[in-house]
Image (cartoon, rainbow over all chains, first blue to last red; front, side, top):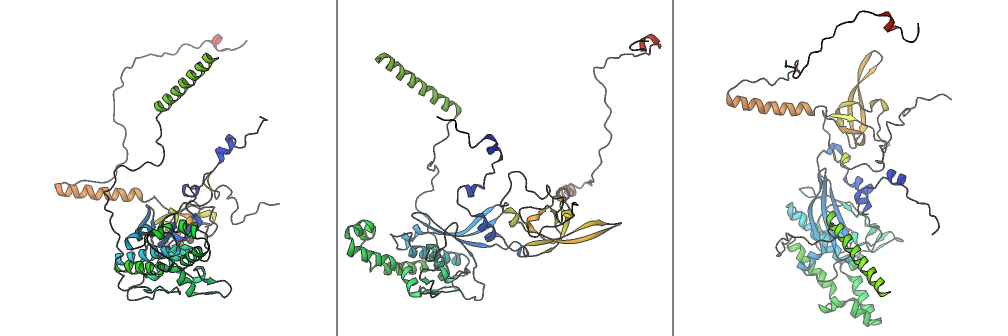
Length: 297
Length: 164
């Protein structure tokens, strides 16, 4: 091979400054985090709550967090896999499920703070912009923390935001990024937004697939079909979920006993002796294979 | 061309960030709270350009007299000419660290209070005053051998080095 000049010399490594751990992991945007956490100094120890929304491939996480020097403290959390307790078995990561998760979190927090009687929020999800009206006690204020998501119009993050707003939290927002906001008319079309909140976009896709590609419809929506959910049933399901959430938002304890031995996700590190033994075994195997070759020759 | 005495002149090293610690500053700085009367060290953080104090105050310690949204007011002494003036400046949070100058005093106060309470319970009177380190106690030197040294008479020939 031709001589290749080593790009990363010893000097490079000596001067290299690593980014923060969470930045290396690509999980935290510190620029945004500083601005979200920074509390006015003349408010001293008053906590500043963040309404954190994160999406994984199969789950939606909504949390209320406030930061301390010791670490972030999660006040309340809601996951979309909990929605199966409230009647939603499929479709845990769509816009409507994000709405439900936000709503669940909001009701949970308000119940925890005993504000749930005062701040019912928007009981009938109509899709139009709703802000909490201050009552006797001031409403619970939080700031939306999207993380590293690209905030485009119609993003599910804003579905969760709408859920929290309708649940009764005071989160400063604008309707610009809700699904159904038209850039041309600069207005939120409440009808379109309402359609999204009740899974209407999913229902219309189901209908179009049923007509055009029935086989794909069978594979894509297999879980829906297994439970007998057609395009017309979806809205009713979500309505029931909303009602169930408002009825009892408290978190349910799992029946499984707490695990003492946790499953390992990465290989265990070998000790020096184990590594040396591995090497010896490998060399022995190589030697015996070489001997066989010699014998064959 | 003359050197120039601008606001940040001669701060090349003192305002620069330490080796491999550039970029975003750790969030603890933003989470700290300051109360009026706290002692505070002023240490400029070159990464944040707003609310920087003048280079004179870098390394000084003062008391907080005001707390605003993103900054604290610190008062400290400055010698101007033949007198010392008490100066009040406003500095952003990032350039300020809580001072440990009173830490030793606070801990000692706490410990003394405990000792005094315990002594009172026992009915004794104790002094919690700090005593300066006294002279070392006397001791016997071990394993010493005596070597007597006497002067020898002066001899000219011995001293002349080289030639004569």
